[in-house]
Length: 165
Image (cartoon, rainbow, N blue to C red; front, side):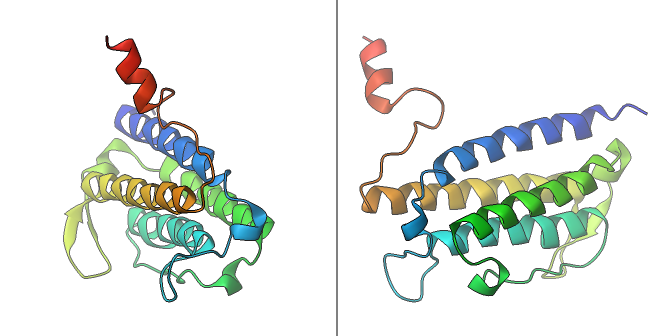
């Protein structure tokens, strides 16, 4: 059976993930656990957090199950390669769950970790906002480290300004 709303969501989410991966792949292996201040997310924490919430919170809630979020500790995936393997694996697992959704499922209520009842499509929209928020943190961290990053949509601000004249 065709599920156009689900298909549209999956397509959009994969584009969001591709943009996140483009900047995340700029993280040098030696900087994977860098943070600007003790007690704050490291770059690795950000990736483990995005992956863990996607798979164990949003994907579980999409199955109308409670959150099983494991946190973002290094013990989940330590080292550059392990962090990216974890990130990729949990995304694949999540997408398999999301692909099972019907358009009718998107209009059912699910329960968030704080006990709120919300329509699933609205909850999944918040998942994309969550990822975009943390992607922005990755951009800022890399800027602090003076590591070049790709433009988000193909052009830098300077290129858009120049072409707008």
